[in-house]
Length: 162
Image (cartoon, rainbow, N blue to C red; front, top):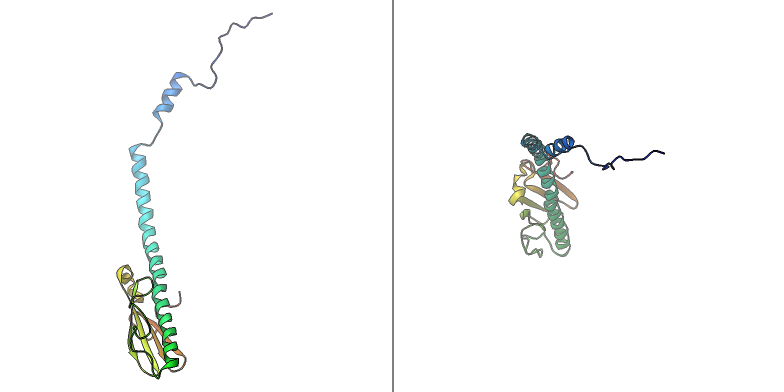
């Protein structure tokens, strides 16, 4: 019979030199951190304009909703009066701001058969140069002209269709 005199080995521990190498390689070097920060900066610079454009697009719906609500209010007013309302207060609007406050709404012209309303961007939305002001013109019994930007009689930038 053989005897086992060998000392018990500690399992799971690396030799002394290997432990030293592992401790030395933990963490990030300054160069690696700077490269990561540079990549994050480049990605943020590429993504920020697209994000801002999406915000402008979402806020644009606030002006469109205000003009469409004004159209509904004018139709209700016209059904009870001989002409369209001359002011927003006559229609019961407490303020000239759109529901979320991104546009200032005003009536440009109001007659018996037609009215023209305009929504001008305010605040951060004022950077939406292609689509400000938004305009809605009601003519006759059921003819609507939606316009935006430099050409109020047309929607060249497709501001109403997005």
